Structures are given as structure tokens and as C-alpha cells.
Image 1 (tube, rainbow, N blue to C red):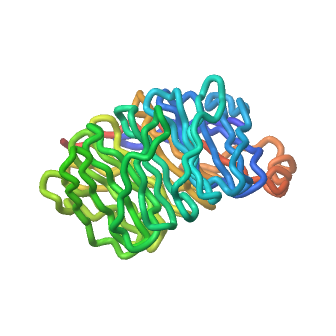
Image 2: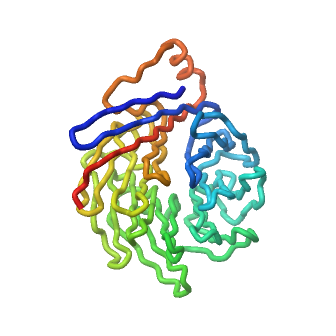
Length: 337
């Protein structure tokens, strides 16, 4: 089902295009957008990855190989590769065209929870329930480095835009910054009171961390300190954070809550969209800086979405499949710089 909705505000407006994806036989754990935002990759507890065409919701490919639930998936910067992390203790690297597995990375002793490509296209990091993160060479599949220091599971990871720093987030309520330039400096960022489940670097030298404590913290890499603490009024699980291309705004999604857009000049929340009512999986800014969010159930922009066939919609909700909803929002904001 594809729908469109417009909502006008006094000084800003939203245009939203909605696309539904249905097919997985288990809970959808992660959704990743290709760099050009033409493809959507999903992974599920059913052990499969599905590749979709974003424009029309058509299934492009079903990807098999893992022997357990797939917890995380991501694309490389050029979109030629994608990677998946699984409860089967492996990380797999796949080529996009043709779709085939090119590396099976083994080394974790427990479930792998996060996987991320470096932006320079040379390496990949994985982290999991064995409390460690592993750095891999994308081309050879060889392990380059092991990062130890977290006292609980590593659940999130991100590379800085210059690929000189790696950030990891953990169930120990901390994020760590690891230098990749050779000096092996480690910086521990404290302040969260819950699992650090998502991380994102900006092009301006900032790191955003989202936590199950309901807050997003924005850190200065140069000063090694927290600049903003965003949210926290309600205890909701933050699921994803994403900076726009120039780092001027940050978007965050939370489970059963709202999609929030924050001004990085002063930490103000400049836009609040009613979020996916069941679960919000992720958000990303497209090359044109449109905000894409993913989740299940509905994204309510203040109006009730028209549905020509109520019985058909109810059948979709009850057919036992986990339905994913992608919403593309063109948000026009007047932000005081």
C-alpha cells in the first residue's frame, strides 16, 4: 500500500509518502537504506534478509545463509556491499550485484548485535554479546583488531566521517571512542542510564548516542564532552539517530513515540512527528535531505490515513507477517542559525 499525505504548518510544512513492505515471518530487527535511498534492506528473526525497491515496495531479493535470527544489517557507502550480523555468532558480507555472500566472518563467541562499514570503504566492525568489537578488512575478510573494554554487550557502532575514530555503545551504559590512527587512544563517554543502542557521527565533529534511558546525548569529539542532552521527559527507548548532511539537524526515533528533529545550534526540538505506534526501527536523511523513517503500524502526521478497503487492511495486520512501513518526509523548516 502506498499513500501520500500533506500537512501545512504556519512556518514549515511536511509532505509524507508512505510505502508498506510485508513478507518476513518473524520480527523485523533492522532496516537499512542504500546510500542513494533506492533500496531498502531488512533483516528478521526468521533468519533472512530481504532487499526491496523503495519507490514501489516490490521485493527484489530474498537473501539466505544465516542459521539464526539476523539482528542488524547495513550498506557500504558505495552501496556495492551489504553486511549482516546474526545470533548465529557470524557476520556476513554480501555483494549487491550479483547478490552473493563473499565473506563469513567468525570470531565472536556469542550473538553479533551490530555491524557497520567504515566510510573509506576499507573496513567493517562487528560487536556482540561477548562484550567485544572486531575490526575486519572488507577485501580479505581478515580480522585486523579486537576492541576490549566494555563490561557488557556491544550493541551499536559507528565510524567517524574521516574513518579515524570508531564509536561503540554498550549495555554497560557507556559509549567508547577508539582511535584508528595508530595511537590506540580510548575515550569513555559516560552519562547514559540505559543501554546505548544507536550512534551517529556528523560531518562537523559531533557524535550522537541514543539510549534506552530515553535520551539522546550529543558529544563534541574535540572537547570529549557532552554538549546537549536531548529528550528524557518520557522513558522511551531511543532506537535510531541520524544527522543531516551538513550536521545542522539531528533526527531521532523512539519506540512507540515520536520522530523528533533537533537543531544542533542550540539543542531545540524544531519538529515533532507522531512516531510509528508499534516500533520505530530507524531514520536516515536521503541525498536530498528528505527524512526517511521506518517502523511498523502507522506514522500519524495529524490526519487519519484514508483506506479504501478496511477489511483488506485488517487482514494484513492479522496474517502473522511483520509489516514494515517506510515514510519519506520532506520537511521544510525555518531554523534560526
